[in-house]
Image (cartoon, rainbow, N blue to C red; front, top):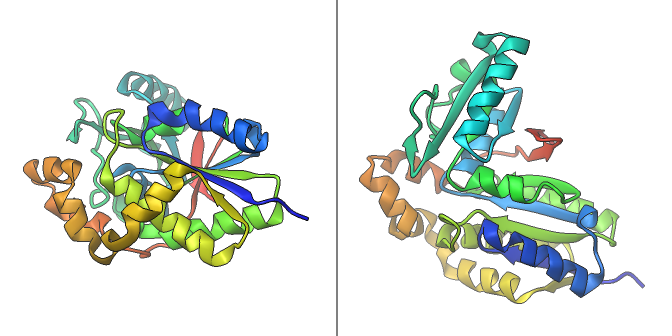
Length: 262
């Protein structure tokens, strides 16, 4: 008889080591048996899906701007300066010396197709760094939530020895509503494809948080703390874009430090 699949949620990147320990306690999983989905709705994982959809060949997430600058120098020597774009934000604002920010609206197909993006953000890329020991790592946002959930379901159904960690990027090391809603939506879709799921307390909390909020994602985003902060920076169009559900079937995957289409 196959066992239930353990599903857990970390609400911010500092929680991730705790959740990895919980997976070991709950089902004896080592980190290589954990499938991880990173969510940063506003805006990193929305941006990642859009950038890959628009033809970007590879995204290198960096936990800090300093690491990003250093990597950009190395890759420009290897591939040529015209092939490398350095993008990201800190506190929602573009980083001085970078080629672009973290808006999904600025990385058009004309600008990004065939290029390599080095990305550093306040929360999302830190979270990707924190989960690098997991076996398979994907990213999701509202824009590709169903595709990501279905991909994860197919992996977990094929190997019942694996468990799931949804890593919400949160805000500056703490909880944020929009990522928790995304986690709950992903778990809801997953439960429609799988029966033998065991939810942690945080996974159940995410399901409760998503219930109702998913009916008007744009309203929820504009009312959230980070949404209000981005709005104060004049980024309302970004917020509305991030509220769109299932406009992409792209499932980004992080492998050996590089994100490509799975």
